[in-house]
Length: 195
Length: 195
DNA sequence: ATACCAATCAACAGTGTGTTGAGTGGAATC
DNA sequence: GATTCCACTCAACACACTGTTGATTGGTAT
Image (cartoon, rainbow over the protein chains, first blue to last red):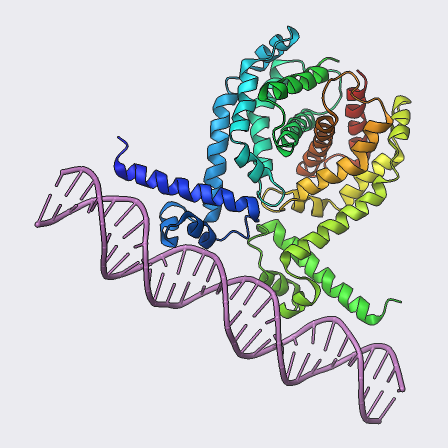
């Protein structure tokens, strides 16, 4: 059903997104104009507006795509299974998959989380992890049972900690392998749990 | 030495910053124009450029000020003393001071860390805590000694976790008192340390 | 052949930018 | 008391980016 027109559109959007990503490595989101994008993509400026409302919409769609793909990897990750495996000294395959996905899309994560750019991707990502992972985690296990700190604070605390790990990884230029990261993550989670 | 001219300049800059802050509550940083700012501040648009290069410079100066003031509170906080006190069940007065400073400047922190605004304040704040606090913390104590995870990852992890706590506090509209926050923070730090 | 569709092109009014040069009024200096 | 100084005002400037429009091109499907 993918007509040649659909492919044409896909190709154009791909060019736009790639050029945009490239530009975001150099400049602020704010300093990147639609003009810049379309010139880099070698398309007419008017064409941009056939696909996106404005550059906010473009960024939003790209972020949305990144997160919805991440969701697919994350939903396979069962907190209870993960912890069970961890107790046996194994690393859940699905946990590695999550880090592998991040590695595969490192360019996007780096740019969207980079200090110049991103408007709210950090918050968005954090919210995402709280909803799709941490909440499950905290409900399915007697997590943090030893600490008299409200749920929402613990959730924010743990999620931010996890994000901090990922940010450091991205900043280090992905020097570690996804397996190493998964192991590191398990260690920390486990370490926090084991009180 | 504060001539009447200096006061005049201070007053104008104050008006600009206040109007800017107010506008950032409503709109994106990007959607706030210099025009908007000067109209709200009831000054001539040209006057803005007598004090700031552009709106980036304005934001930068405001962030810088917030962090350099925070630094003064933070440098009094000795990690070893903090942990010593914690062992005795006390909360370090200086730890409370840090949260009190954040409470006092909540408006700014909320806006700069808000999802719409801020370009890199989160990263800046994180970097700030890593340098001014976490590094000291980790060197002065045998922290995380039970976990085989590299220093930089632990540092990023712990700092993000701490920031997560603060973000949640700001999001909750500062429902807790600075003392309660300090206690919560000590509990988590202590909890992590006590392995 | 003809209707379709993505993309092109040129032109549009509107808005914001940063800068300039002349002018205002109060404060400090002589 | 005249003059200089200074923050600020005001109007105007060229320039850049925006989002939209209507006409056009060149392949593709009917």
